[in-house]
Amino acid sequence: MAGLFINKISKTRQYLISMLAVGAVAAVCYFLTPLVGYKVVGFILLLTVSLIAVIFDILPVLFTALLTSLTWDFFFIPPHFTLRVSTADDGILLAMYFVIAMVNAVLTFKIRQVEKASRQKEEKANTIKLYNTLLNSLSHELRTPIATIVGAADNLQINSSKLTAQNRHDLVTEISKASFRLNQQVENLLNMSRLESGFIKPKNDWCDINEVVYKVIKAIEENKISQKITVNINPDIPLFSLDKGMLEQVIYNLLNNAVLYTPPDSKIDIMAMAYSNVLQIIIEDNGNGFPQGEVENVFDKFYRLKDARAGGTGLGLSIVKGFTEAMGGSVLLKNVLPTGARFTLNIPGETSYFKPQEK
Image 1 (cartoon, one colour):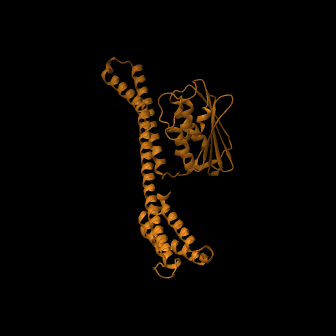
Image 2 (cartoon, one colour):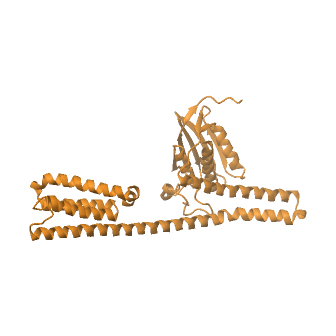
């Protein structure tokens, strides 16, 4: 926290704020001196130095320590309005005050340096762990489709004369599916990069929800899935002004996640309805659901379930959350009975019950 203040406030302003703080405290203490005595004022000024030491850099704090020492001596230690000290006790007290204030400033600065070094070390360790997780995931997710493409392409090139028409068709299909899978992984990485940059902004346009949903389902079914997808969209659902690309990616990632992690004979339901100006999309399956202890972590970047099958980068659901929140919405995951999982999207947006006429 202190580092944030130092980075945002210039040294000149730190000196100025320190002077104003000491002046304000001294003014208040000046009127309280008859009640509390000048020695208590010394403790109050020392507390002021301690508070400033928590916030500001070392040089302004040392300046504050010197300034409070002079202020205490000039205005509060008898005789007043002079730097002369009348008794040996007060001289020793003033010297001890100055030493303690300086030591306090230096120790606080050293503690801050240790905390900063510890924080940087922790951030570095987390970064290395993050990169290792990413590389381990990508080593499988990228290598597999690339190997498929290379192997199929070599067969087409080397054994072209020996292959039947069906063999060629099968190899081309493998290349197409592997290319699509590779593209999805790259797309997820690019999307996550956009989210991490913090500059992602939705580009809203009128969306026909039926069109968006069925377009995504078609892309999912091109992967020759075995699960059955059923659609239930309110026929009176209006047009929504949303970012169509983001919405398609969110729905695709949720459906793709359901396809990847449910048994082959599972059923996947997708429902869409409107509540006033809020679009609600529910994607529910009757698979095995999520372990209770891991439900709250599934939207974390690079998070994968402990018993998940090999592969997967753990980016799909984090992108779902990031894109949904970028559109001003929310996503909720809940296990359903007897088995299965339900994702509920609530995305606000401007609505229209009139479809634009085609020119």
